[in-house]
Length: 224
Image 1 (tube, rainbow, N blue to C red):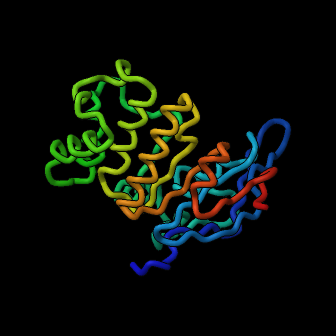
Image 2 (spheres, one colour):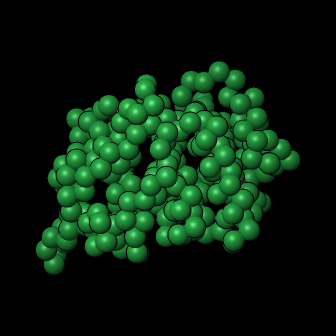
């Protein structure tokens, strides 16, 4: 893949939901492209449609209008299994709420996507990634025994173990204190640069957004 190749494009995306009060438009006519290796922040006030947009870009939801092309695949043309397979091979996720499985240890949480992807030596790889994020002493700890910052570092290791082409991060520091949040931000950009992934993150944190090469600002469901 050439350095300037487009890995993601949003083409006239719209998203509406229907309720007893009628139709509510969350996103309207969103268009942009993102190249391999770019870091892009999606910003905007609460309720502006940031997380909805991220879900559409990752194929977790489908648009009411328009389409998303991810790694050369039109997500509208894939069924749910096809979109899940594409995510498993090409995409990593980091969420505000960590989304670790509570009954698995830190090591097992990080191993899981590697096992699902059929990677060689998932246990050794998971240990190496946990060491890389500073959690060599926490292999056998369950999420409830880890601090928020430690849980998010486990989530970072889990997201990067498959060496994803694209990493989506939804408010990755939103539930962390300033010190833990700063540590996670540094790790996120350090790992992303080493992995040469494309980074797309949703944030209301201006300092975090300014670390990205580009910002896409949403207001009232429209891209400014």
